[in-house]
Amino acid sequence: AGSRERRRRRREQRRKLECGGGEEERALNELMAICLSNRALTCLKLGEPRTALWDSIQAERLSPGYGKAPLRRGAAREALGEWAAAAEAYERAAKLDHALARAATAARDRCRAKYMPNGHGSANGSGGK
Image (cartoon, rainbow, N blue to C red; front, side, top):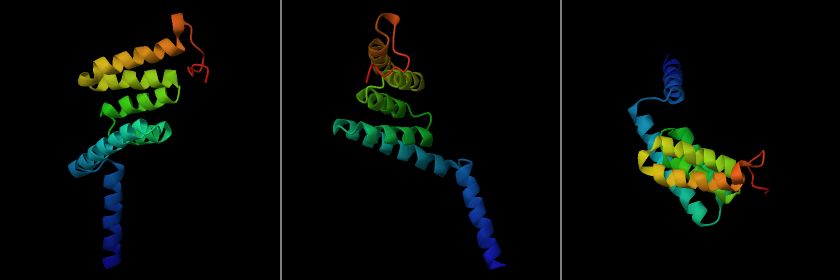
């Protein structure tokens, strides 16, 4: 009977995690998203945009409403020369967080200018890289 109860508790714990769990899990996800976003910024400053990209994507998965995660993703994509993807990420950041809107919109426009000069961009938005 004891092992059956342990299995039942494990199943319940997995279900909570898979469904987003309670308040504690959400708070932990948000905190982890902040940490990953901060690490992404650090990686960008260290010249490691691929690591920054991975961290920012993970941050967005953990906390989809956290505006700095797509902002960092946009910066990583921009550093990699992926202009269209960067512009999309900046657009998302601007929509998620009003405080970031001005900076994110300016960054989006800067990236659009690189892959859509005079309204004509490359199909993949890579800017020729």
